[in-house]
Length: 530
Ligand code: F6P
Image (tube, rainbow, N blue to C red):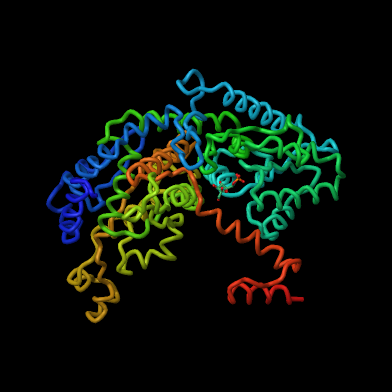
């Protein structure tokens, strides 16, 4: 049964459909001041979203009705809010360093172990089996054991320590491992096998192949000096042949896609130094404090969550484009795809009932300005509602003369164009070289395409920590609003199960029957291939 606020929002959405953002800006010179937040050094401008004061009031009412504050308390108290797996959700405890309320000795112990390990690698005290220093780290993991650290290492390119190459292998396709190993020398290479469960097929296959590559070059005894592991499953790590002293533990109260802050962040610490890794944690902790304490009207993650709910369930958007105007954040869309879609791409509520509205929209995106020369045409003139989220940094991380002001100009021009659009009479009155009147219809932009712009002062470990935690809490808030469990991922299991059944068939040890004709046809084609 929809609540009063929900019904009111449906009525407000019907009105909003007939209102153009261009007119809202024209009639309200205070629109930016009214719909922007400056919190924690970040600026969130949502004035180009199709909202009014009344809409925001009703959206905030939904959060109250969903008992959002109570859910935050339940998470912080370590209740098993991941009810389908009977697990607590305490990734915030991973960044409570020092004497914080959630500070846990086991977390501090692993951070200290990471620090000692980084010092050994960076100081060349850790040597490979032949006595050579380590020059290349290869992280083997997938999903949350890959996307977070890979994104963060890429994002912090300006903070990289010299002389250590950090690479990532995730895909089961041998092309991934083979092409990365082509850049590695066995004597100088150290593998991190990163897997929460230590059972994921992709990671186990890549780890076994990497081990075989190393053993072929340096012999079996070399494994101990060239493999470390990050996992919750220490017996499986030992069974793989990795010395327990070289295993970095984390815990089942850390979800895979929320695990960057645990030892899963080891490649980040190796790439940028443990000091910077701790700054990343501190940035996330600052955002935790903000999310837990800031009033609803000033709350950054909550505001993003409410805007997404409005666009998805009231205005009918199917997707959201994430457009970082930062090459260093080029992997952020991919990382957020897992964080947002694996968390909230669900259709069953906490009571086991069908959810009767849309949940997580399809997230996609690309670093600006590259996206402008690929898919922006469709956003501007394709006729679909596509809310856009721009992220930009006031200061450049690589300050080449002439680049950054142009980059910012493009970013702000895009959100302006999406908001304003261009009318036929404006197109006709343009004095460009190609202003034939018959071309005017092609130059019309409908505009009214909603967007948010998030401005960071700069991209550094602290602001990156803030940014990631901002999205984590946004995901949590949306899970509360949709009354779903954001922390399980049953939808990923079925494909794994079927792949297990098909493997013996494709390998020829089981017959092709009891399969649909398409699957059987595809399998037969591979079985008969030379
Ligand atoms: O994609 C499913 C999933 O379980 C993710 O949630 C997880 O991040 C990924 O697989 C990898 O799992 P693991 O770290 O256990 O190898």
